[in-house]
Length: 590
Image 1 (cartoon, rainbow, N blue to C red):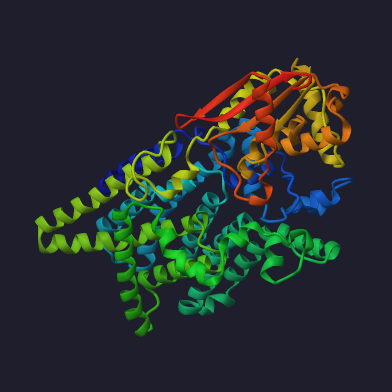
Image 2 (image 1 turned 180 degrees about the horizontal axis):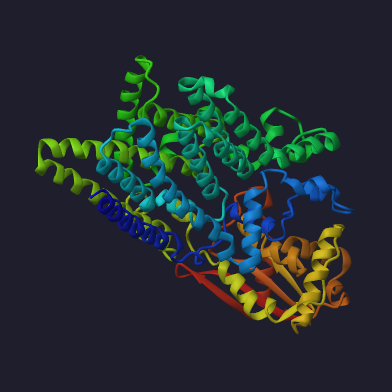
């Protein structure tokens, strides 16, 4: 009977995984790169910490004119290296594409659903070994179902940010922490995954704090055990590349990396302008925005269920804490959720960070929801059916909300908060992918640059040389062209769609501002004298523009007016039934 029960739940879980995979992979490459996935992805392609920022320079900027010191390659200036390395492997397998950029997030998102499934069963086995197995399996299955249909978790599993990997590794730390509470030998695996979690992103410190706090509460003697000490040493060993990176950076530059230097208040002239920190706002802003920002990622029904479960969790946990009974699922979940909320207050409640708490909210809802369902069933079958119908309805609506938010990438149909989340703004086609398709079909796949801009960076010159040699072996022909772009475009998109081909293929891209400045100082025929025969100009129309007002320029508008006056031909790219981008092309002077 038990074997049959397990098989039934496994079959259902497999169906959940297939449904989750569809939600996370459908239309995966149809929406544009308009967020930090651009900055992460561009650096991952060549595993180089360089993205052409004049306000947030990197060691590759500082040392790039000569040989890059060996320690620079141990990490990145603003994040640990693991996710960059994973994406680098995927770019190596699938080529420089949106599939390679986002597929790691998809895979780790699916693995997180699996981890939630086994973590709930593990949690019940350790904290409630006498619990009814049918109830345990139902709870674990329901937790994985909630996470699989969550619009928030689906969103973070479809975008090339670090958080999908971080969520999986953090869940692994929690899983092995719970296992270690039952058997100390699992502290070794706990330490290994804690090291990898910290190697993925510093925000994983939340599970390190959770582990120490909870061990102090329920197993403080474990801190002196050989298994725990081995686990701690394993965590340090795995994380050691970042430690060495910061030691050598301090010895050479007098400060630590971007995040640590900010945390301890070091004054770093190279990083005086910290965009992400400014966006987080002050402490009062973070507290006020915490729950509204968290609320907007899911449908109203799921939010209400999560809020109800959280308030009941607080009630239950306070009761157990007063009794000094800390070895309960309630207290463990309470500490997990509260520590995440405190982390968000410290670093800012941005959507990508808030996604980290979603798996634990799924577990929380499943734990109390199934517990309540079994209790109601013991009292009244009709009421239990009514509550089960309510859960099915809420999750069904979340599926609709999820599809409208993440898979419908073509339009903003419906009402924000009712039909889709504000996260949809990062999951739309704005026209930038159209630029890439045009350039790939008409230029990148057929030619290599006959004219390039020399740089002061030796590593860039080496990359350019290798790219051109590869293109020549492939039989491509040289194209003496100059590419001008509208600098008013969304800055992250510029990194992916403009800086990427400049860095890795050597294509000569300059902003409209720079183009006019060079003509003014060097003469109208300067580029023609340099051997340029054909010109392209990428002009943004009704699409996302820069958030940084100090970069806004009228040069692109002036150039497009000049080209329109001369009836210069162009290729139009449309998004949302509007002209989003124009790509002008001409020979000689405009």
